[in-house]
Amino acid sequence: MIVSIDVVTLAGKLIACQSVTPADDGAMAVLTDALSALGFKTERVDRGPAGAQTPNLFARLGNDGPHLCFAGHTDVVPPGSGWAHDPFAGISEAGMLYGRGIADMKGGIAAFVAATASLLAERPLRGSISLLITGDEEGPANFGTKEVLLWMMDHGHRPDFCLLGEPTNPSQMGEVIKIGRRGSLNVWITVEGVQGHVAYPHLADNPVHRLLAILSELTGRVLDEGNAHFAPSSLQVVSVDVGNAATNIIPAKASALLNIRFNTEHRGEALVRWIEACVARHAPNAHVKASISGEAFLTAPGQAVASLSEVIERHTGRKPKLDTGGGTSDARFIASYFPVAEFGLVGATMHKADECVAVADLEALVRIYRDFLEAFGL
Image 1: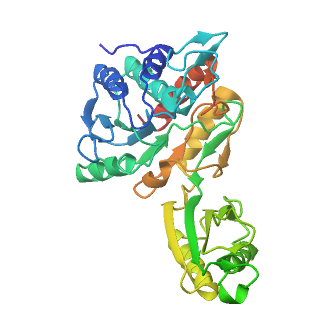
Image 2: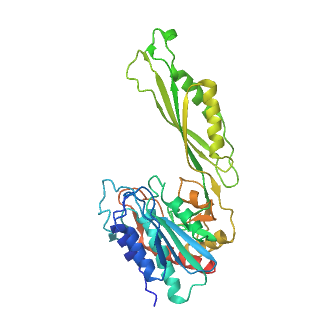
Image 3: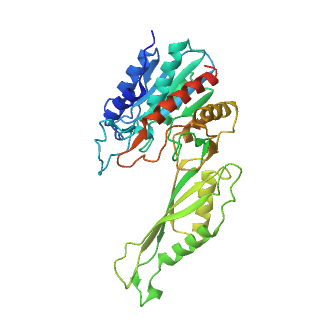
């Protein structure tokens, strides 16, 4: 007999786990118990240094296709101060459910599990449902979703499609499905000079002047005009530092930090080479360090996205926009293996004090996920 799962109750149990990255505090156990009761086979895929492993979970029900994977994370950001409600109590008040992580994204996980239970209570599953859940999405993400994906490939788990339950809606349910994300590149530039007195510049070498020339050239380039699914790429200077508290000293070093959010017109490595070439022209001995946290990707709209869109419109009365904006998510890792789209709750309060979602929205998401499972052929 398939157990019934109340979405508010399950969400409350997950909120009660103080799983601030990298802690788990029992969140994976709560989820494992709920999934095992539904007949899922669960596997812990914890990875990372001994004694500090990232908690990860993979669960699957069924062996045949079609195979839909739901992805998400149980870790949350620190609660901070200014809460009117205990951030880990899961308090329901005036139709709202409060708690750190309820929007981002314990509510989405609870809704998917409840939706699966609802489907299984009506009839047997026709294919396979799996869940890829990590405990490190809000942190470095070095040993989370990336490692589970490798494990999945090694063990023959390749879904046909993945639904990531991030809070995609800005203010109302049904506004946005994410079908892609921009890439993100951080670059640190350090220009060395020779310190000296400002009155005797011929005895010094001012690195600030060369750094300014570098930044002027980089910011002066229009990276692209965007395309059908993406806005134009954006290079932003986020920090310039010389560590100079004096008014009469030419500094010995100047540094800058850049971030580029780029669309599918670019690859991260090509942007790094462009920056390195620019720096070399102005300051041949400068140091450039780059970190690509994710490449841009697009899931071309197909049957799965069309079915998801139709179900959302049926339940909310809104035709969702197919969007690629915002920050990064673990979809950047998933897209290298199989198609992925994102849809979840309203994210207006995520990472804020008194993070909350409407109980009505949580229940609506259960219905949307349940009907998407049906539309997917499950």
